[in-house]
Amino acid sequence: MSHTSTAPSLFNRKNPFPAPLLENRRLNKDGSTKDTRHFSLSLEGSGIVYSPGDVLGVFAENPRDLVLEFLGLLNLSPETTVLAGETSPTLVQELRKNFILNRLNKKFVKLVADKLSAGSFKDRLAGICLDEAKLDEYVESRDPVDLLREASGVRLSPEEIFAFLAKSSPRLYSIASSQDVHPGEVHLTVAVVQYTTHGSTKRGFASGYLAHHRAIGETVPVFLQPTRHFHMPPSGDTPMIMVGPGTGIAPLRAFLEQREHDGATGKTWLFFGDQRASTDFLYEEELRTFLKKGVLHRLDTAFSRDQEAKFYVQHRMRENAAELWKWIQDGAWFYVCGDAKRMAKDVHQTLIDIAAKQGGMDGEAAAHYVNVTLTKTEGRYLKDVY
Image (cartoon, rainbow, N blue to C red; front, side, top):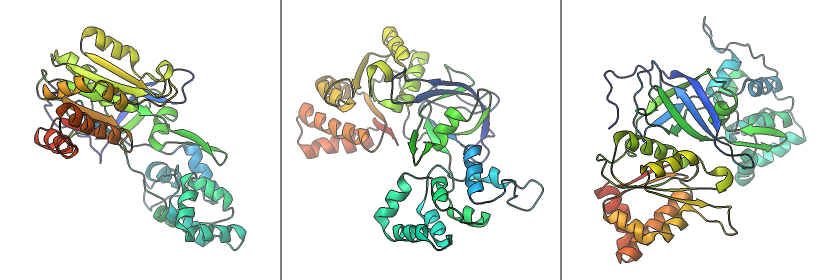
């Protein structure tokens, strides 16, 4: 059903593959408040073999101009070498690759407060550092450059910067493609984070890098992280219910592509949601085509801003409770992908409520059915939440 590799790839987290960017396409239409992108990357020559449900790690970099402003505020030369030796990275190279400059951390604020010369801003910052709630609020909307603009004249050594700035780590994205359908490629569905605070535009570390700092043809360092827990049913006859609003659609698109490629006969039901149908229906044409071809048997959508009251995927599930319960009784696997904080919790609770009402169980029995029987014993309730 998925690829078998002849030899393992030489590329991994410690040795990422430089994948050329093939496509950077906005999925939202004009007038949307969101910026969700479809990225295609080339895996030609990498030996990387993935299956639907796997995850791609992306190593991002800070924008050069942000790093230069940071160093300028500290009166440090960007070309200073960090280590002794022939191939020693410069300060600008080290900060671009290995540290977080789009978010502020508390340790760094305390260091700056410590190092400032006496004055009203030092006193103010010291006061903030003594109050955990105020410190939380201070770091929430600022990045290190915002802080250094206020803390003019402060001096830090490269060693102090490296000890007190947060280290960057790769961002993990659910793969949005089947390798059988797109040989030599991998696709991602990414919400691009962008907002303005304290007079400057802030961007997500990896989403901003992919959307704004990589031209088509330039490479992105990537590695594969195979899934342990979010895979397709072993049999193509098994029905699948998939809940994936927003970027949660990514692995579900991969599942549908794979099912079509495999000629699978199991029924599929997708719940998709976002803000507005007119601007935020991600992959709408593809999903409609899957419906026409019978690869997708049911498509239920919930667009939260298209009516007075907010309406979400879990509300759509409740409306279809009897049918959904029947699918589960017929052996369907249930998938949820996307926001862990709210959506996945609401979907989980809705599933328990449906089990109680449709299955004639009390609350405790319904919770046990969903949390234990469906999830652990039968292994057909799978989550990819973040």
